[in-house]
Length: 150
Image (cartoon, rainbow, N blue to C red; front, side):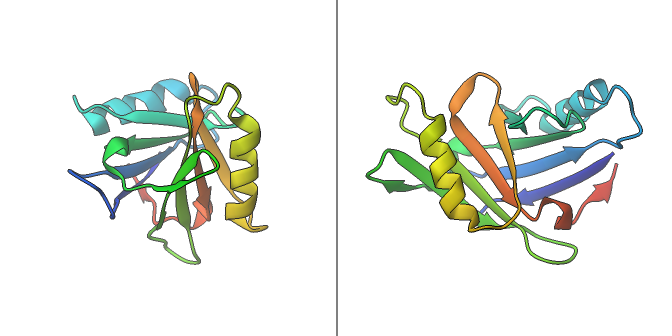
């Protein structure tokens, strides 16, 4: 399994971290290994876990500790964005955390539009919480991250 972690900057209070867990594609049943690694990482801390939006990659999960501590730029159209460059082994990588106003009954069209404009024709991976359609995590350059083997 590969692991990436980075402390996030520009927080309003406390600390925040992103962690990416990527199990080998040779494991036919990756979820137990990924979930075990996440539990060891977060210990007893509260966290948010995200799966790929299209749910086609069970070998990969993103975890954010302290998501409420991040400083967001709010837009009058009903969303807020946090963004930060990520450490890479090569190339570039960038993180976006996008929140839609919880008053919006169906936030998917808004979030799709925001992602379209933020990624600016770059390839990206999008992640969601299974029961929270108002948050989307977007990473440009996921394969460029400075992973370590665990």
